[in-house]
Image 1 (cartoon, rainbow, N blue to C red):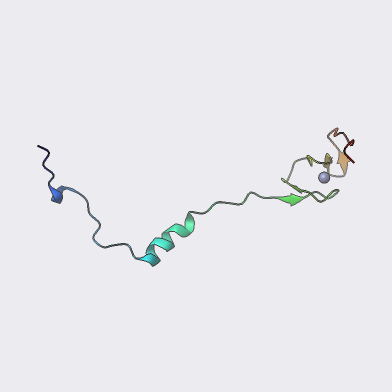
Image 2 (cartoon, rainbow, N blue to C red; image 1 turned 120 degrees about the vertical axis):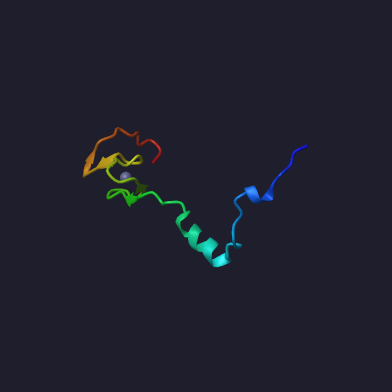
Amino acid sequence: MLKLDLQAFAVPFRRTSKTKKRMRRTHLKKEVSAMTTCSKCGANIKPHRACPKCGNYKGEEKLNIKKEEE
Ligand SMILES: [Zn+2]
């Protein structure tokens, strides 16, 4: 019923070598998001944002975080 003409398909001329495959995939990697450390408590935080742990931003407390855990 279904006749497949093999000449109609685009077929790779050569098998891709390990090196070529790996060279191509060097661009396929996850980017690590930029992180800085809080100047007050030293926690890993995102830049240009108040610290979620102590609320510190540029030397001032911007967020009201309860300190009952300590
Ligand atoms: Zn902090």
